[in-house]
Image (cartoon, rainbow, N blue to C red; front, side):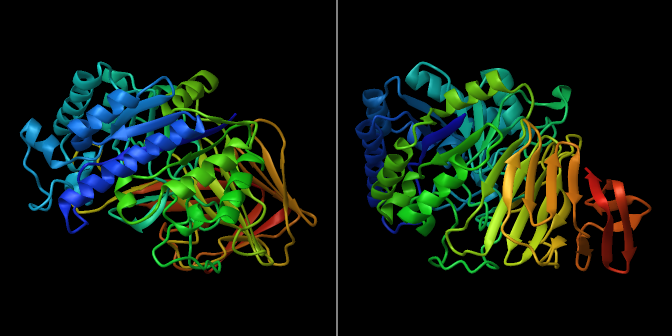
Amino acid sequence: MKIVNYMNFVRLYDPRPMDDALSRQRHFTTTKAEVELAKECGIKSTFLLQYDALIDESYIELFRREKDDDMELGLWLEIVRPLTDKVGLPWRGDPNTAWDWHVIPGFSMAYTVEERKMLVDEAMGAFHKIYGFYPKTVASWLLDTVTVAYLKEKYDVAAVAICRDQTNTDAYTLVGGYFNQAYYPSKYNVFTPAQNAENAIDVPVFRLLGPDPIHNYDSTKYHVNVQAGSCCTLEPVWYTGKTPEVVDWFFETFYQNEDMGFSYSQIGQENSFGQYDDLITPLRMQIEKLKAYQNVQFMTMEEAGRWFKETYHETPVTSVVALSDWNSDKIQSVYYDCKNYMANLFRFGEKVFIRCMYRFDETVPEHYLDTPCTTWDATYENLPLVDTLLWEDDDGILIDDNGAEFDVKREDDEKLTVFWNNCEVTFSPDGVCIKGATPTWNLAGNKAGVRVDGNKILYSYNGNAYAMTVTEGSVKQDGETVTFTGNRIFLEV
């Protein structure tokens, strides 16, 4: 199934413009134009309302008038002052505004468990009072596990969505997550896919913004030449989302290359960006390009969530395959995700290497499971196995330093093979199999205490001890250099 969500985020307040009244009018004008665009193009849409916009009469009138069977209304769960005032909590943000982009006060993990539930109940109750039903989609750049579990248990939401992976952007870092499609989260950590049903929250979590599988991870090493401050996503305010040939590359990557049976992207924008940029022209361009794909379906977020649950009883294996790059002819990237781990195989010039790999452990709790976040920013992460962004080494597990362009083949519903020259890398839920190469790995500057003990690679990160086992082939360590040998090397995750 190939799915796209046209999903826009609706705020009333945003303190960044100088004139608050003017900014509110521009926000409304942007949202109205996004609604009109969906009608003009005849596509299904989802609009997620922040509490301040939810209770505003202009937006109530707009959506009561325009809502039809092709439009879903959901909740955008950033915490704003009207919401904290309503439930009797102090506003800990900028006293001069009702919206603050920092984690304290703007996101659920900044509150106690009981406060999170109070905030959810008020937002959901207000929604029901206005529209006569509870929303089935709830999203935010960040949501904590307790909040997601409560939304599912009490309100039976069909879909949840959070931000793409990013590091030190805005007030939050998300690193080592399930890359793009959707997964069932652990009841201990919303950022971690559950390995077993008893530890899963029974609602899919989707990833937002259509991340670039090459440059989203690291936009500084690979010759990116975009506007200062741009993000490498499908967002129409950025260079990559407004440039037609780059958008063509995105949609080819998401919808024409190997996807293990499920591919997904979200297009749209928060309305507050409309005060700076023309969002509608690039959004129309993206929609027209997507409509030309006969096998890509526009769905509401609720429909996508229900399809996911009907299709998958546990987190599926997915891939995102970029066999070319919009910015360079030297780069290829393959993301593989399953319930046990994520990995990214990368070709840059003549080097082929595992750029990053993270283990998923459903029992490792998020940092804010029982206690509130006490800092202005927040971090969600999984257990690092390889990371060339946050560690010092640029080559990760270097498989070939004289590599050629590679091809990708789906072996079955769970296995994906990447091959070039006489080399192969096969990903499966159990781990990674490497053939025809003698990989090496420089451990300098790693942040997970990596060391080799017999056939095991041992890790210690944030108080968690874990291992990757070499079940075929052999591994040895000489100082900070690790070498793998054998006709077939299997790294069991």
